[in-house]
Image (cartoon, rainbow, N blue to C red; front, side, top):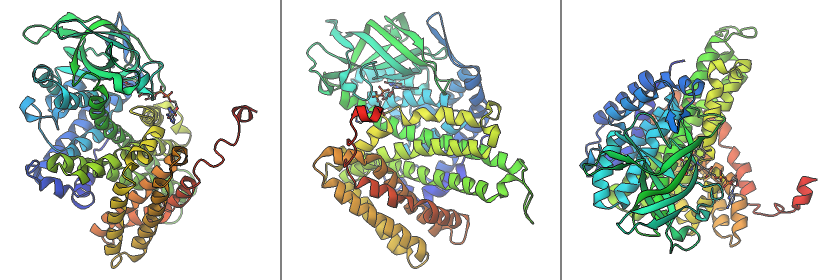
Length: 570
Ligand SMILES: Cc1cc2nc3c(=O)[nH]c(=O)nc-3n(C[C@H](O)[C@H](O)[C@H](O)COP(=O)(O)OP(=O)(O)OC[C@H]3O[C@@H](n4cnc5c(N)ncnc54)[C@H](O)[C@@H]3O)c2cc1C
């Protein structure tokens, strides 16, 4: 089933739903005119449709493998990487001084989403490089920037991120990888990292690892962690890959999906590395990379949801079962329950994509204006975008299999691959549970101010919409009012377990309300049209879920620990 890049959807949403005009109106992004945005999206869409989508099944059927310590990638992936690199897509938002395009993160987000819908396991490779580019841009010395950035941006070299160790997953501060000064400005890195995405490949001249490790005087926990760039080949005097560094891929993980992406166990044996940022300042630098990656992973979920939806719709239109009602096509797409599934998929993809883009717009506005309220908005929306994007990816892929009936469970249709591939997005880059805790914890340290400001905007839009769409406007206003009450309740809880217990339902409810808000904006821009019809479906049928979710969030930790572990096991 060919993938069709949702370019026109993006154009509509940028213009009418998420306020991209604000970004294009800044001096920094003044060149992002409508024409130029259309050209970028169309060109990226072509790459996704013609080059990447045909590789999707290759990755699944011919997984990356380890041969004599070297990763051999799936057929066609080397050519796919080259096409991505040659198009300049790795450096779309990277600094122009080093060969990037310097375009808004909003466009990068759209491009990443489309690439994920076309071929998730290959898209993860440039995503890793993009995160590394951003971390080096903000934290590395000028010398490191001059050496690494042009090669990472051009795709001549690739980047990875190395946080996880067997005993240090969500608890990054528990890591034990060591960094000893060599006395010449470099460091000897020793330890094992697990689950490293694209830890090696056979198509770039070098693979540069960003590694978290502890200096000899580093205190336990996250405060004692430093960041290092550790290349597979040590650059020679001319900056070309020279002697092999003392690091290796020990093995590749056997995974449920995402087979085209090699997930590596890495061993560092006194490997030479260079400090990025301040000693013991590793988490600050890593956060730069992780924030970028969290938005990117949210986009992976939305991209897969789009692909799975297109797949299911095409199947539903062809498959004939049951007696056709008068005037019906005779396909299963005309059965009420199948239509419910298709409408839900489409409405949810729109909602999750809107949240993703709104987060990207806030990041661009923060970068362009330096204003604290945009920074707070971006910080608030990042965990919501990650979770809503990835949960939508999983749910839509799951529903897509259901639309296929038995054929959804049979691998040859490709419907199950979407589900297997996307499942990890809720786990990596900080599990969705950890994201929700971030939302009700760190992101509410302001007493819920950033959340309140966003809810106020939702309410004022709903007020304005009352004249044209009174029923939809009222539903969105009421939902946001319940969200406001729960937000105030949560922000007032001193016992963090009372917040954390309801963090996930609260985040889902926030996502539902935001979805209503953006659907309402789309309906206002398309009165009586398909956008209004979809908004009506979402607001009447899906938005009401917020009530049950927020009720759960307000129970706090009461009863959660009521059963002992023994009783749980009984
Ligand atoms: C395919 C794949 C690719 C990956 N790529 C990379 C990569 O490129 N680089 C990298 O560094 N890592 C990578 N990872 C690792 C990934 O980021 C971790 O798996 C993830 O952070 C979770 O850590 P963990 O697996 O140790 O789970 P754990 O931390 O053991 O978590 C288990 C469960 O406990 C919950 N939990 C843990 N701590 C808390 C807490 N304090 N409060 C509440 N709940 C908690 C979690 O939410 C989860 O539900 C990858 C993983 C996979 C599977």
